[in-house]
Figure (cartoon, rainbow, N blue to C red):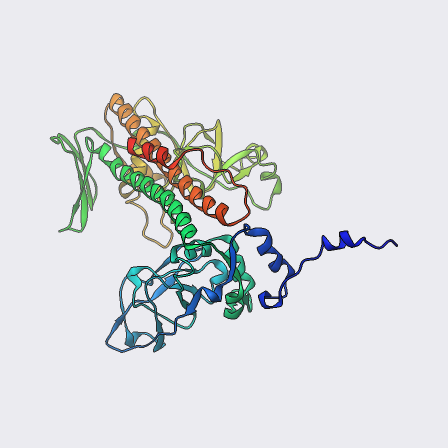
Length: 470
């Protein structure tokens, strides 16, 4: 057997100083060398933060804010909407936290339950299951530290520092504090944080514009309907803006009025059927997956239903074990917590489970898209007759009884076109917001880690110009 040459052996050996050894895992030690870019000092976390030990002895008649830390670095927020009196809190000795401190959950740190205390939680209290720290701002900026803690690598560090039974693994504070993270100069930290904030500001602006457009959608129906809450009677009524020459009393608690004819859905529906699920024990009804099999989870985001999470085979249809809905059918969720969601079958045909009822519209009277938008925007009308049991239900009879104002086809076309334009803007803005958030995260990680990411070709100034044009 030949011995390996010395030069070859040294390619597989790495040295580490004992005082920087945080644990005995070679993978952990080498990962820092591989992940972080050269040129940054790697500092143990204990050199950057100092444990907060400010105790608070609760008083019975004093009100306190309590804290919840969202998983996956989603932020630190108040638990509940109300302050809690000390007499209603079991643990009387707690810790007082302050704005700008780093805080994490001992139990859920491995799932990203950490963040920076916001201004609104100044003086809030936590139990010993939360660890809070003052940040040494001369070494690391709170915003930069917050970004570091939001990376997947930091969550992995917390997982390595956690021990215990599944579901109750607590972070080992000493092991956690020994982990090393990159610490650039304060000047570089400020530059990195500024770039991140620029992209996040654009993302937030796009999201706000999208929300404004969503709020404006119902206004398009104002020439037809206007919903007015009747606070005195605890109900609402629907009125048109113009003189009313037609009306209908549909429900004991809701009065619909419109200057256009009010029809029942039964007058517009050509056919209506409820979906069925093939026997799940019969594998050949689900494999191969050839036909879209829609369930409530597939509805609610897109107007046209193109892709379902689940599929069934053509054999299930041949054996009449599944209900077939042709292209243009409106699929309406009539059972369950997501009752009222709706979509239009876009393919030649599709199937659904029994929570969904499908109906075809007489397109000589109404546009399918007009009915879709009416159902989508006025769930308080389309779902009003649902049963109030544990499992809300709207059956075929109740769908047929839903009232709908019916303006001329030309007006329906104009309304659908206007809504489509706004929906397209909303989709663009939401996509722009997500892209800006992704770009912010990727640019930060590329500045710290050895990554090779491709960024959006749209600059921040170009993005701002696009937002201003909408």
